[in-house]
Length: 249
Ligand SMILES: [Zn+2]
Image 1 (tube, rainbow, N blue to C red):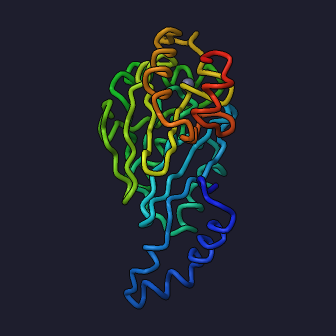
Image 2: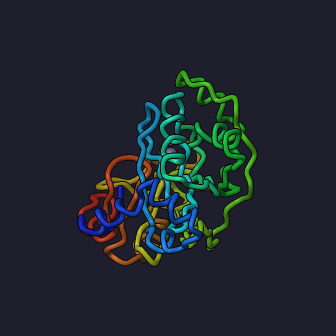
């Protein structure tokens, strides 16, 4: 799924993506291929909680996963095939928060690519109970790798030529963060803000007032045309949610 591109732009983009074209340019030592690649976001919907996992591709071929939620073998292979088919190099695995449905694929990602998850330190208590909670839903979560590092509010994360700024946005769960790209105008909101609704606050560490504060003081300060890529459901924009979201209008 592309972002904010016209259909025309997408066609242009696809034409530069042919493996043979890539191979030819690389074989000739031509760097023009990379110059014409663009930021792209691919959405996958994984596990029975229907979590959106995203792969963010930079213009230079590095990529990051936002919420590695793949659980079934076919889901893991789908993600792996996408990375291979597009000649991408996975460099980060970013976790919006550590509810089990968002972290099922962290073990696979660590084992397959040597890339460990990054999450906010306040998420740690969730990991202590993750296996037990997964079991209560009929899932097995035995592989829970340690973090590569902890994310901190204000961090600037680089994926090739793409920069994501980390916002600490608790309220749905302690440790919830959003990832914002200013240049292209998009934000991954995890379970903080969805199209027409907000994250639930009845789970451990959930706090409605805190969630409202996170949305109003962090997300709603972004430009109205910022595209929201949420942890569940369809895309939205900050402007649309300001106007229409019944919880935060
Ligand atoms: Zn959640």
